[in-house]
Length: 130
Image 1 (cartoon, rainbow, N blue to C red):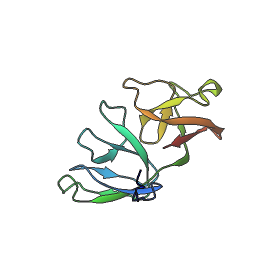
Image 2: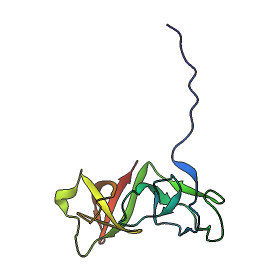
Image 3: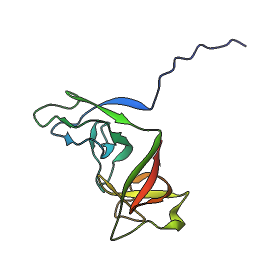
């Protein structure tokens, strides 16, 4: 049996190429579309949440991947709680879903998983995003 020297990288901050035409804002939920490019999170089919944008960025005049944006992950973020489909204490330990780029909910149309609910504070929801 032979050991393998496996390369490693930190996954707390990652750089992602942005989708053509995308504009994103720091502190909001970051998603990738079906092609793998970063976009602002919405309750839209085929998006996957990857973290929170560490910076604002504008690729409105560029093609896919022309602009790289930094995304933070592997930690808990305090996000807004939905007023229409609010997360409750019963959601702690379970997945919550995206309502918009800064709001999570107990349920939504497309059920895009935002992360795990860890608790509540000042009207917000602590969400762990891996």
